[in-house]
Structures are given as structure tokens and as C-alpha cells.
Image (cartoon, rainbow, N blue to C red; front, top):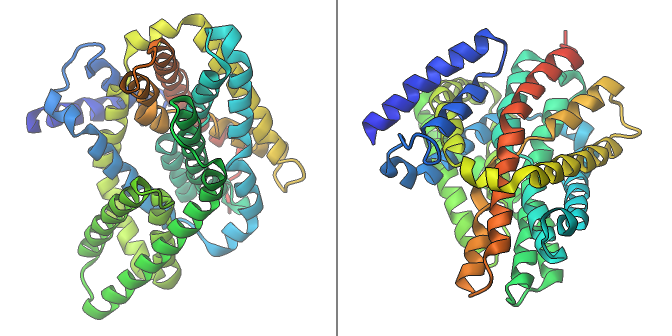
Length: 401
């Protein structure tokens, strides 16, 4: 596995350099490297690497969420709070409704199967959006009005809402007992519990650092380790039906650290920035490797058309959330574009309906279609979305002086 990782790193660094030379974000090149090396094309990624891919992607995602949390500011959060709340559910709802209504005619799915597909496709990808927003934070692009912060917060909550919606729908479909009222109530509860847990852990952490004064490198490693444990505990709680938004807990942990110990937090942020060079390669190459091109091809033109129409519905929902806001027309267009990419959730749970159908002895054909369209959504939106965000940010966002 070590040699395989070395090959991935070298090829991704070359792709990063070449793509940046032609003014395309390096992560696009890393995604393509992952696809080419993955099981569906050349099969050059070793099975042992793929076996730990989910854990490696999670660690990389935790690193970028920590960096995002260290970029949050209380005054900016207050400024964009209401809009972030709207963006966390309304665009996803619009996209899911469009796919639910059109899925039967486009793909031959039932209305409930189309709703399950809609819940999977409706999630924006923090793996794509968060790194781009952190980059814009550092460039002070759009920061005067808090646009990167708005998208950092909204995209993280968006995933919580969508995954809860998916869990309810698949439970109903497979005949499991689902308490819909509790599932809906669990959305705000998971956000609140995750936030409070993150703030609590972050407070204990900076008090610990005050007492023992470790070097910045050790602080960064401690924060990463505690964050991984927090996510693991959160997953265990979720498995026992206790709502817990683990990724929001990670961002909250970093947020309270920068609020209370800003100088120390900046030192840690610099360390995380260096670690991210490696984690970015791992995250995007392995997301690319999770894409099964043959499965995506089976979705065909009907699947592609449904995805694009769903994105149009999402865009209308996103723009609607911004009506009456302080943002200019150009800034609103940027936010619409930034809220399009798919990757993280689709790669994580795209195959889950198929597995649920097989385990319950149901016809698995709808699951195959759902998986194919989920994979196709990554191909159509992840790399193009990253490119579009980069270009739109340069063209539509002002640099704070």
C-alpha cells in the first residue's frame, strides 16, 4: 500500500502542477487521477488502499473542516446566520422535489424510489466546496460580506439535513419502523448537540494547552486526534439513534479555539495548511477512485438530463434564499454556482439503497439505477463544479482591501 500511495501522490502532484498551468484548480486533476487509477478504468489502485479509502477520506475531510472552523468569526456568522440556515435546507429540498416528480418518467422509478434518489443527489459536497472557500478566505475574496463563511456553514448543515431525509425514506421503503416526527426533530437536535459537544471539547482542549504549552505541531496533531475521536463517538451515537452532527462538532471545536486563543489558533492553522497538501491528494484521488465509470454510463442521457434539471431546481432555490440579502447580483450568481458540486455524500451512500434492497430480498433494479445516477452526478458536477467555482470566484467576488 505504501508504494501505491507514493504513486498516487506523485501523479497527483504532477496533475496539480499541469492543471494549474492551464488555470484549472489542481483538485480537478487529482480527481481525474483517481478516476484513471481506480477500479473502473486501469485498476492500478491496490485493493489494500481501497480497503482503507473511506477512513483516509474521512481524515482528510476532518482536516479541511478544522481549517474551515479556524476561519470562522463570530461577527461574520451573525451577519450570515439567517441566510446560512435557509441555504442549509431549501435548495436541497427544491432539487429533491424536482427529482422526485420527474424520476418516474425519466428513469421508470416509483415516486418513493425517486425521492430516495433525490435525497442522495440533493447534498452539496463539502469535499469540493470547503477547500475552495478556505482558499477564498485566505485571498480575502468575498470576505467583506462573509460569502465564504456563509457557504462553509450552510454546506456542512446541508449534509445533515439530506442524510436524515434519506434515512427516513429508505426506512419507509424497506418496511422498517420509522418515527418521522422524531427524524425531523433530530435535524435541529443533531446540529445543537454537535455544536455544543464541539464547543465543550474545544474549550477543554485550549485549557489543556494553556496548562502544558505544547508546540504548535503537537497542538495540531492533538486537535486532529481529538477530532477523529469526536467523529467516531458521534457515529456510535448515531448508530444508537442519538442525533449528533459530527462534522459540525469538528468545525465548532476549531471555532471556539480561534475565538478564545486566536494567536495559538493561527499557529495551528499554519500547521494544518501544510498537512492539507497531503490530505488534499488523498481526499480527491480517492473520491475519484470511488467513481465507477461503467455504472455511470448505464444511467445514460436520461440520468444526465434528470441531474441537470435537478440542478436547475436547486439553483432557483439557492437564488430564492438570497432575495432581499445584501449580496449583489454577481455575488448571488457565485453562491448559486458554488452550491452545485456533488461528491462526498453521493460517494458515501450512493450504493446504500442497492445494498438495502438486496438485504431485504427486494428487486435490486431500482437500486442499480440510483447508484448509476449518483455516480454520474459526481462525474458531471465535481470537477466541472470546482473549475466553475474557481473561475466564478475570480470574476464575481471582490477582494477585501
